[in-house]
Amino acid sequence: MASLELRRNSIRSFAFDVMNTEIQNRLIPLLACVANNKDEILDLQDVFRRFSFDCICRFSFGLDPKCLELSLPISQFAISFDLASQLSAKRAMHVSSIVWKIKRFFNIGSERKLKKAIKLINILAQEVIRQRRKLGFSNHKDLLSRFMQGDIVNETYLRDIVISFLLAGRDTVASASTSLFWLLAENPRVAERIRDEANEVLGLNQELTSCEQLRDLHYLQACVYESMRLYPPIQFDSKFCLEDDFLPDGTFVKKGTRVTYHPYAMGRMEELWGVDCLEFKPERWINKDGVFFQENPYKYPVFQAGVRVCLGKEMALVELKSMALSFLRRFNVELAHPSHQIPRFSPGLTASLRGGLPVFVREIKNTT
Image 1 (cartoon, one colour):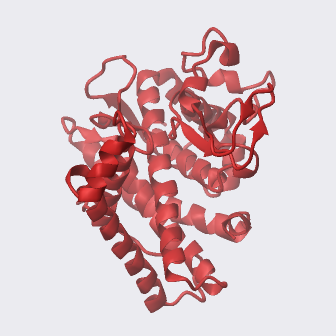
Image 2 (cartoon, one colour):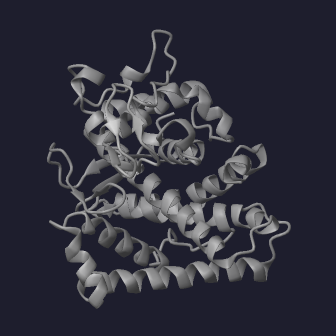
């Protein structure tokens, strides 16, 4: 159902309107406020999480948590999500799964905190559904309303849809945005070229008015893909073999075997990307005609591939590119603590920079 809905022009137009409103009415005013105070440090990772959380809630459920208001209010939903994601990921860091299973059995330590966080997430997800019913859903454009108009009446299933869309739509976009802006701060020439391309394609000081315009911004697309090659939001992923099978090279895989692939490592393999594989080089995605070209998704499995390709891939790209373009055409970013070292990550289901992304925001003066 989600796959069918996300292909509709009406839902794409609705999503773009939601994102654009969030950018123009909240993100840009917040950045302008910070830019006016030259000594203020802003954690962009926190800002991008708030931005993507507002967008996914408004797009998927028709409800506005207002996390990106100038006062930067804290959402209990978002806090619980962060805690549950972090504690779930930390399970894999134990020497043996027996450790966390014992904790879960006795309801102690991190497993007690995880249980409490999940309980609160479930309660809040149920409240989202209740509010949607209270407000009515027959004439609303959000995804949850479309599901509720269909045959899905099971409350637990609807709750799981809410949680799945929040997890997929918030953390991955926020992670990709954070990595992209870290790289742009380290490579200001790339940010300048994005601005030049936008001025050529859209016109000087002209706003983005539709997601279709993004298709002609080939260098911006290349920057986003190159950023996720080096810093994919999902750094590794696993599948479990349903039946006995053979890999293309003849390797036998027994039923029930867990097979893990690692996009973070694959993006740094010299045999896949060449001797300059560790460089941030958007030009590797541009052909001789200056047009973006797509690599084989099995070589670049950031969005997965085949029947398991990410349902929200196009939506995520529109959100990321729209935000980055509006941001860069008005502001420069400078790292508050430049180190020129590879970022370090915190445990989580998606890549999260340890210590956030503290920056100074500088407004670009219009010289025209």
